[in-house]
Each structure stands twice: as C-alpha cells, then as structure tokens.
Image 1 (tube, helix red, strand yellow):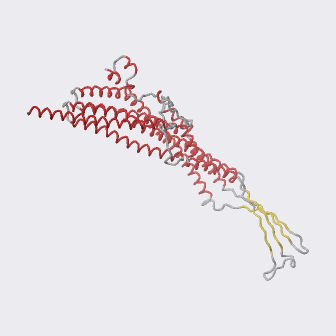
Image 2: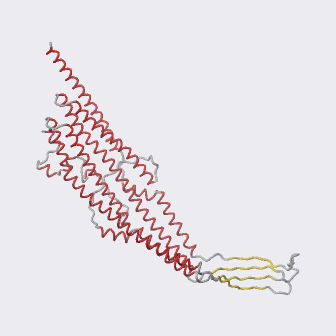
Image 3: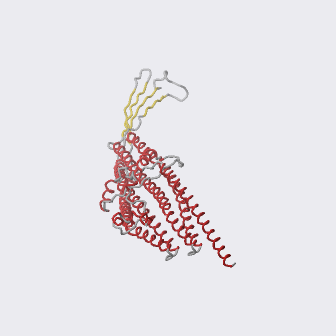
Length: 478
C-alpha cells in the first residue's frame, strides 16, 4: 500500500514537472515569435544613412541657417563703412527787424540756400571698410566652424543610435543562450538533480535582458529626438536603423593633426581675422588724431539794388581733447589687439589638447577592441560552452554558467562601446582639424562587417577550419 502510494506521488511530481516544462517552452516560443516579428519590422524599415542626414542638417539646421545669415548681414555693412557721410542741405530765411515780414520791401531780407559735405581725413574711409571686411571674414570662419561642429555632433548621435540598436541585437542573441541554460535547468530539475531555484534563476536573468531592452528602446527614442531636432525635423519623425560604420585605420599622428588644425581650423582663422581687424582698429584710432573737414557752399538771394551773394566755407574739427579721447581710444584698440592675440594662442592650445585627448581615445579603443575581439570574447564564449556542458552533467553549478554568459555579454557590449567611442573620436578630430569632407563611410552591406554578429566569428575562420574550436552548430550536430 505504501509502495503504491509513493509511486503515484512520484508520477504526479513527474507530470507536474512536465507541465511546467511545457509551459516554459510555450513562453519561450512566444518570446521568440515576438522577437522574430520585431526583426522582420526592423528589416522592412528603411536604413538610416549618415551622408543624407549630414546633407539635410547642413540645409535645414536652424542654428547653421542663423549663423549663415549673420555672415550675409555682415557683408552689407562693408559698403556702408566705405561710404562718405550723407551731404547736408540747408534752407533758411533772413529778415530785417522783428515786427514784420520784410521780404520784397527790404533789400536786407533774403532767402538762403546751402549744401555741405563732410570728408574724412585721407585713409580713414578705407580703414573703416577694411574693419568691416575683417569682421565679416571672422564671422564666416565661425560659420564654417559651426558647420564642422554640427557635422561631428550628428555623427556622434548617429553612432550612439547605432550602438543602442546593436545592444538590442546582442541582447536578443544572448536571450537564446539563456534559453539553453533554462532548458538545462528544467531538465535537471525534472530528473531531481537540481532545485527549482536554478530554473527561476535562469528565467530571472532572461527577463532582466528584456528589461535592458526596454531601457535601450527608451534611449533610442531620446537619441532620435535629438537627431530630429538637429536636422530640423519634427521630434516625432521616424528614423530607421543606422548602418554599421566602416572600420578604417587612422594613419595620422599627433604632430600631423596639430599642424593640420593650426593651418585649417576655422576657429584659428576666425581669431586671425579678429587680430587683423584689431590692427586696423589701432590704425583707425591713431588716425583720429587728424581732423575731418566739411566743405559748404551757400547762396543768398537778395532783392532790390543788391546782387545775390554766395559763399564757400570749410569747417575743421580740432581734436584738442586728445588726451582723454583719441589717446584713450588708441590704448583701447591696442588692448583689444593684445586680447585677440592671447585668444588665438588659447585656441591653439585648446585644439592641441583636444586633439591629444581624442587621439589617445582612438589608440586606446583600437587596442581594447583588438583585445576583446581576439582574446576575451572567444575565450569567454568557449568558457561558457564548457560551463553549460558541465552543468548538464552536474559538474558545474548554475550560477557559474550564468556568470560566464553575463561576462560574455559584458565583453561584447564593451567591444562595441569602444568601437563606437573610436568612431566618435575620429569625428571630433575631423572637426578639430577641418579635414572632413562632410562625408562618412557607412557599410552598405552588413555581410561585409568587420565583426560578424555570431560569437564564433571572434575566433577566426582558420581556428574553426583546423578543428581547434568547434562552432555551436558543430556541437549541436554531435
């Protein structure tokens, strides 16, 4: 009686375990169906390309448009600065006595007409025109700098958007590996080799990946809003998934980059134009020691026996307050010139510092990506495969397998993080050196990626062909 009861309890437990396993498999199947639908929708979505985005930014970005209009506005000031003051015309009447209007009765009552023109001291007019020209050239250089900065900003946002999509792709790939852990845990639990806690642990880690995916989707929306704002679109305008950037070697060294920035940077050119304008202002302030003069011609219309009269006069201003006016203006202009020179040196030092920082980021990222691609990621994947094999046979605990898989995920995320940081640093260097031709290469065919999506690609085709490392498909066939 006791034996029969015990046997029936065991059968009930087995049936309960089987039902749980079927339910878990159904949940996993539904999740994979949902992921498949998302992948189909992403595949159907139009790929977001970088170059058309840059072209649209240069055309529609409101800050760039405003900066360009400032340049256009400044050009209108040049002919104004080179023009003479407006001539003056005077119309008057001169009467004899205060009690009556004597025109026509008194020969001393008369109408008066006068025209005058002020002429600046020779050289002043050309200096004013040159000052306006230098100011316009400085604004134009700042506009070019804004264009380069905006392009670099768009590239950084584009790469951040790609990284977010790439993270989602990696998370979905690793969800299948967590499903393998879950299946192994359910099988061990069904056979009485492991507690139910290991099944729950594997399921919890899988759902935590789904949580990260939702957070990444929110980040994608934020980046898309910033991109749309920069481009001049509505913040809710749809954007596709970015293509993968092309990995190219960086051939320049720090000395070459600094030299290029000093010769090409619009910021430096703007400061040089400001120095040139400041020098002209010093010359102009020194010219103010010399007087301007006004020439006036007058006609007096008289009646009676008296003939009409005319006069030609010259008015000259006398700068007798030069100690508090002209001299102070010269000192002010010289101080502004010194300020402009120091600003130029500060910009050069700032550019050199930023170039060194970004160059260091590029070289560090290249070393780290090589380490992740050729060392840590293949070993981590191999370690995971060994751990899950040991877990199936009961030689390794579930927490060990989960930690191995989490390490693999972290390494792949770190790899792509360094890959993107390198591309962003390159974009910033292009803006600092003005070397960019407003173009950026993005891979059109994802089958040509330097790093494939599958983990076994990190090991290399040669190692797989020689049988040193078995691919997951080969292990499944065995």
